[in-house]
Length: 502
Image (cartoon, helix red, strand yellow):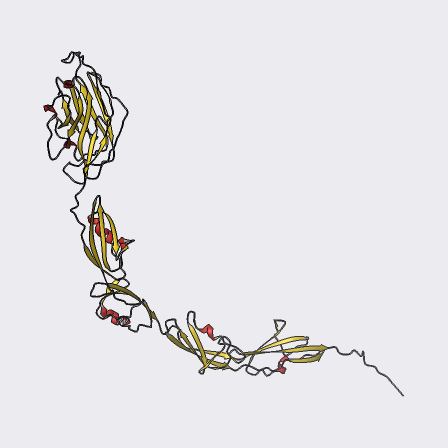
């Protein structure tokens, strides 16, 4: 026997009725049914989803299947229905002897009444019947979407004629809208459900996800949220106390509920604080906040500590306070504790300067990052960079924390030689001069130079020029003076003369 598959024109007609017991009709392809052959007729079903039992509400059930076959020998036909999932149901096999055709033949899946089996009928098979192989419920819980196939096998492989003498001939399958097709019916959910009312309490500053409260339990509903007649734009983060009205809709059903949101006050610790202390003086961190009626928890740098430790805190770091009121609402504050040493300047100092020198007081201490105040004998100093007056100088340095340190510098003036004014002198050529005779150098170390060159014997000089004297005391104080020496030429008279006169 030769099997031929026909890719015939596919027609899909979808007729949507009302929600209540509505049906959508999907047709099959049409074509001939040759004798001694197997023929296939298909229907591409779309968009119904999973087939639900006819008694189940809220889904599409396969209620009916209509076929229309023209054949003058139905008793040789075997008709099967195969789902997209591969399940095959026998619709009719070798029925209708002595008659012709399946005309407006409908196989039903009725939960209330059971129609007679097709095996009890006579051709033409008109009206409602139960499939020979069982109920259409054989396809329940399978996907309705995909290619369904009606297979018609004509087992007549030799000639013959009807009782009226009409020769047996090929039949036809009519898959048009008038001829037959699927009837998927939707059974809506009856409106006897509900959505729950509820309530919640949050702390001031928090939000509540009202949408998730309802969508978690009943995600198939479409929700509308209202507060005092005003549509709630963002029900996922409500923060206004009151009674909300909720409407949930699903197909033809609408339910209402109320939800009450209460907002409790939370503690108000105030702003975070920064404390700077000098050295390690204990600080009572608890006194920085109003903690009456609150439960507190402290931590230092992320490690839990006791309240006793924060009553006399000395360790620097970041302290965190978590305060909880009777409603369970929480506020958090941070306290940053800094330690500044008192003796950050260092020791007092003594400085000796010569009477002709200046001292830069600011070079004696590192005061970067501190504000400074200089005084001499209690009086402010305008310019501590250049001082020459002896006395007790005091520096007060103040850190940003307010901690202060004080240092004193005792400045003493050392005696400085006083050589007097520079000297100008002359000698006649051929003579010598003692440069040391111009100054009082008793107790002083002296150095003579001319044009930067040391003079080894300043007591016997016969060359003109500027001679520089540096006289230094034993303490290192020095004075400088110049001697400008000019050498004069002596007149040349010649040799002596001996003259005789009478």
